[in-house]
Length: 168
Image 1 (cartoon, rainbow, N blue to C red):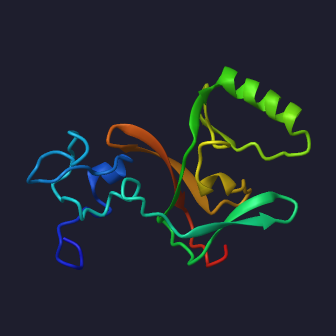
Image 2 (tube, rainbow, N blue to C red):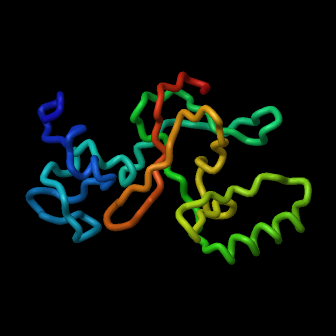
């Protein structure tokens, strides 16, 4: 039970621990958009950030010598959901074809927004994407990628691993 007295999953939730978002309602025994069900807490459950799009407020910003970057407006705490990395799922062959075409058609633009998903598969965030594509690589990262099962579909959550102040 949360601070507001509403039944809610916490850090010990088995779904949360297995990177699966909670879905469903104890009364309906199914999700409103999906027959998949794994939680009795209902719509106020605290483990539904991706499906409810409860992302940190961010904005793109030019990073000197690094192209675009993404900064937080209000800051984020360790463990917070920052964004979802969205884009087209493509295979290795398609990735190579797209990168060759990109370098041919845009020789002075090093921004290609393709992320490795798993062996042989990639997320291309050039055309179909959100703000997460602006996040830069770091040798001292403040976020990590977390593949998360949301209603039976694997989506990539970007989760904060250390507190980040506003503008960070």
